[in-house]
Image (cartoon, rainbow, N blue to C red):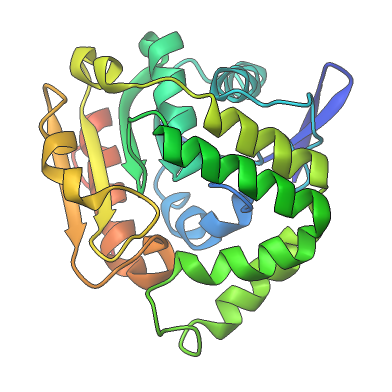
Length: 271
């Protein structure tokens, strides 16, 4: 892991490979390690940077609240520190919200974006109340929150199939601070609607969606995919929220091909 200091706090990331750059952002309770398989494969062809967002992985918590705009600014600082002026950026779940904030703030730095099991809409009032309840659970018993939350990211009834993955995610998330978890939940609760951002982008947008995903409004998938001027999608019928684990070959191949085309590469090996 590499790191830089921002506001006196450590932000960690990996930087692998050479050439055109792909940036990978993880979701809530996760870290850059979710992308390990993608980094190993894609860094043979291009440069891949995977960031631990503030309060997650080995990155420090910066503030009591981490708005998506703050996280996007942190990602920008990492990229400028590494000499990256343009990239394709993919974000899983909460990372997708950060990608959309980045696209709003720094569109000229992007060649394309991938919204990976995520969406552009702000929380509904019910969603905000659920965030408040989650914060109270984290305050009372962080480990119990993690223990209950992470299995819900996978398809119902598949806990035994993904037991090793679930246990590893629980183990890593257990090391997170309450402050970092709450800062992210609050930032997601307060995030803005990003539909206009998607409509106005002049770059390709890839959506990767799982139709068994209970964490995003899949009934609005068609509406979302039609928002950008240039839209592509990979819709996975038997996948929930963790496509990089549930359908690794399909999602890796799609993201690799999309990245190559955004950069105008004349060849791509997706095996």
